[in-house]
Image (cartoon, rainbow, N blue to C red; front, side, top):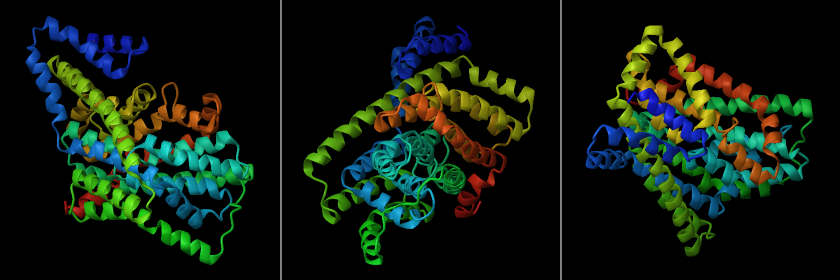
Length: 427
């Protein structure tokens, strides 16, 4: 059976509406049965992919984000961002982006950003006269920062699949994450003048602003604490995730006293559900990737791509096209698990740094989260804002410009991703 037939079967199952993880497993079964592959080997491949120390960070970051959403930390981060940039025209739109940058240093996921900050941001913008679709569009555009700026669940999963240092990958997202935030802020400033967005109407005295800043300070320390540990080499990504959970518990129970035992139990249950979904995708994708490897599909694609060109920049451009299309129709983690074993060999053979490639892969897939037809961020923010998806998509169109410009810069200039980790590790 050809590897391309397996991929064709997988695509047919996806189009039929079967969940992606189930489609990967079902597409692999005919090869397993016809190829007389021992079933214990299949189980071993799936379990072995899950038996990964870096993947332990995934449930911990999910739990940390859930705890911080429940304990009032998200509200405080939003208030801090409001103090810093709320006075500009379109101030709450700028607050939206800055809050996402700060919160991304905690959650590691775009959907956690949308779910955690979305309600607060959209409600505040509605109260100040923003169109709901504009508020929703800014919210999902800024949420793309979450999986780029450390910590990042998609980057951790990419590192596990590509066997690349998780610490290097997380650190590589610092500069691109800030670049994305700046690009989005510039676009908001332009649109704010065109649409006459209001300045933040909430006025605080110096004393009130100071008290709010002091109250939010322990929460704002979370990303600083995590980044410092990574940059100084004190923690691995998994250790950072564990420490973040304990810090979130400390803030919620001791400092802010808003986190109750029933809330902790509820968030643990939510974390188990979310983690089970992700790990099922990872296990199914491990089987799918194993079948592809046996059929030598990655080698065939590597030969084909290198036969077209050996120029790293041209190969990255081609990879961008493939990843952007994949991001429109595949869930990001599934796309990472499927495409990384296929694309990485060809691009690394051509001289592309695997850390740089990881940033390019994840960035493309995050843009896919706000791109139809699958775009999960679109549907989540549509539910939160009660705005039809079609109107959200239309309002989001201008924000593709800064995101694609930032993607182009990261693709063309690898040092944007590799400079900081190379500096830290003296490479």
